[in-house]
Length: 430
Ligand code: EPU
Image 1: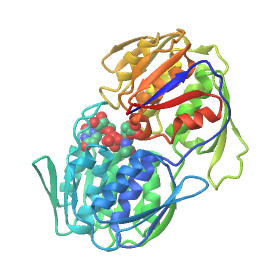
Image 2: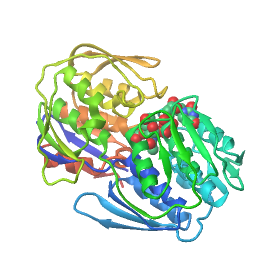
Image 3: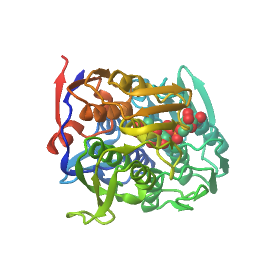
């Protein structure tokens, strides 16, 4: 198990290239199961969850090849022969997003057997809405021996109203509905950019989808889907994390290959606490990608923040915002509305000197408090990012254990940070 040793107190300065969005790449990879044709995905981030999804595709008997490109990777997937319908516990337990293969397998094969994901550090995270939706489309769904067993002759379009907005639930049902007979309407659907990116890929494959970006999505089923080429959107959470890195070190970063429109709530909140952010001319980038210039000029103000579904402030940036809030003058009240248990980083930040009280879904951060280096443990992906950010600003050395969590969703974050002035070493613990 690797750990990071971070020498705090170095101001960051320079340019950072943001990778493709992990949470857009994962459903895009699952979508390749819907067709026997070639799916070519560009701007695939080099993160561990992508490797896990590739292993899952491999287990399903699906060929994929990865080619290194100047920006990101290119992944080619072709499920030429019908995939195996079983996604085993060993891979699903490593990554909950494995459940994204359920809808495509069922739609293509009429049968899928996918392990139920187990518990999770950030909340219960059931998949009941995925299953209820598939039943509404005519599938018989049973849970046996820890597996979801779903069967259907052919899915039939219907109206699905989500009780709660769910990102992967919307994605799973949207993929399933592309091959259903008739029209499916998803109401109270997620409008996250990652959902829209998946829809763009499906449309390129020949799916008939209307209402993109709105909570009502209409999908008219087709009998088969074609191959496609698609470029994954920039990772808005990686970009947000580097924005906080610039701010918390009093630094100055230019972030290349971002999509500022996806970051409106994050940019507005960081501006409220006093971080200076501007769109600047991009350097040799593809269409649709822009650059953002971020300057951290402390002192910062305290500001309350509530996590919400898109276009609200993302729960995946809550932990990183909390690290920055420790440097704001006054009390910042943070309310986490998406996951019920996403504050494990608060106790670790307190070990570094932060003054944080957690009460249910609310956390009160009182600042500014000087941070001092300490040994801390990462509990999940975004929590580990917040500990790294705090370590960058802390006095002395911090040791962040269990950084495998951060490798799931950030591409060699220590190398990217070191290139702009951080001092982080990765130490392998045998
Ligand atoms: N929910 C249910 N039943 C369901 C599905 C969801 O009750 O069947 C609840 C969840 O328990 C949660 C809420 O609905 O309280 C929202 O969960 P959602 O289903 O939207 O989350 P997800 O699809 O499992 C994705 C991202 C997460 C991100 C959330 C929220 C992927 C692969 N994962 O998860 O990303 O936090 O949406 O935006 O897209 C991360 O990258 O670190 C990460 C955790």
